[in-house]
Length: 123
Image 1 (cartoon, rainbow, N blue to C red):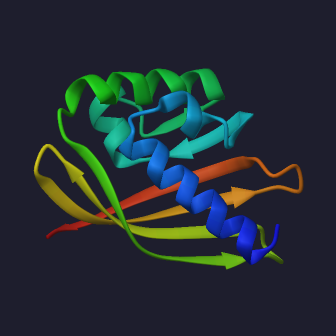
Image 2 (image 1 turned 90 degrees about the vertical axis):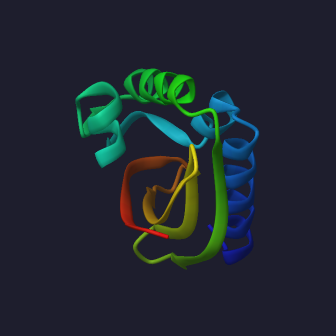
């Protein structure tokens, strides 16, 4: 994946979240995705999810809990030799604003096979 492809991925990912389009976000993930998130722990009582259907269920449930869900990109980095895309963004979840670092491990098929969201301090 080129730097331009990574930039397009990030733009589509952020815009899809802001449109609350779970299916568009899921289009980036492999069926066997492994996903880690403390927010998942709060929403579905599992901080680790395995499989695209589990991820879809978590995100669909989260959409019900957040009247406000807005991501604002700060920066991203792409490390092609590792297939690692790191996005740094501000997440506004019902007015609770936090800096987030989300790591996405992208395989040669262009899909994310592993991802982790790290929610930081309130802003």
